[in-house]
Length: 351
Ligand SMILES: Nc1ncnc2c1ncn2[C@@H]1O[C@H](COP(=O)(O)OP(=O)(O)O)[C@@H](O)[C@H]1O
Ligand SMILES: [Mg+2]
Image 1 (cartoon, rainbow, N blue to C red):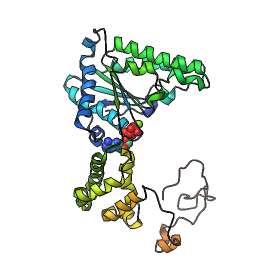
Image 2 (cartoon, protein in one colour):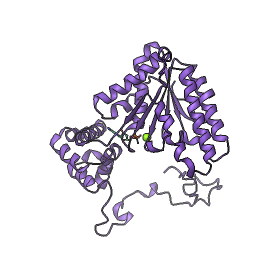
Image 3 (cartoon, protein in one colour):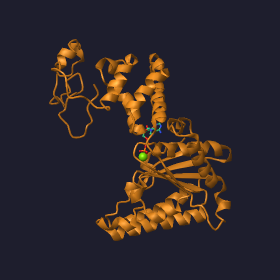
Image 4 (cartoon, rainbow, N blue to C red):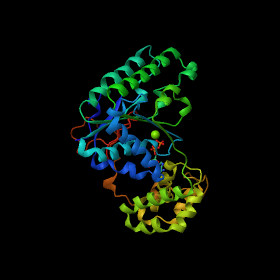
């Protein structure tokens, strides 16, 4: 049992997982970074989780705080989640690890005093209560710049006093947890480290800066993405093994972030209808085309065929156009209505 329904979660908590869990291995493995990076991160996490209590006796005590900073799409959030699972694997024989994901946007700073009260409740009640239930706790705060807003530049905010109070509450809370619950680990991420409060950053035991992938890493991300595709469509395996073409493709993706590189594969699958309907027919041309178009589309080509020109032979009985919702309460009608003219909630009837 690892997934707790969202409705049962305390305010500001996005999700809670008990780890290690089978389906949580993929995050760590998905992120391609040098070995040293993963090892340093894991060592930092294990140091706090395993030895936090003893280390809290030092005058330079750890705050149990890791900051992952860098451009969007470089794998920070994925790596943070993966770290919780790998740390949990390492500690499994000593007990379970809870991964708690915080929603930093659940603490709006525009209600006087409210934000501060909520942050205080989160850090002095919610986190300690959850941490008391299991031996190890990892708290993930994504986009931490909206949680620990840099006070020195917050003057443009609608209510700078409240921003100050909320950030003060974060610092106080982190300090309290470092003292009283030294084996709680905070893993935070930010795309915008300049907006994170300096006093918060100075409490970090490790600030790890992510950068855009280099050429070799791009190649490995492409190989990994195509390899994942080949698990579903084994005909694509040769593509994942063609190192020369992978290198050529990678050279078209220089300067891209990891997310965009993985999405290139999806864009390649959607270059042609034929491939979208049967991904096993993906070719190198599709991949190179998608890269050349930067994952987008060229606004070019002749006249597009009509819908019925493309799909002329859909059998009559599969068409749902025999009623238009006005038959909603017509009990004599054999089929439920399939077309109700409600465009507001996005819930289309199943077809
Ligand atoms: N270095 C990388 N290696 C492999 N995949 C990556 C890398 N960086 C990002 N990705 C992929 O990009 C996507 C977005 O990653 P995410 O963790 O959300 O980035 P961030 O939090 O930095 O914005 C994920 O699917 C991830 O697998
Ligand atoms: Mg992120």
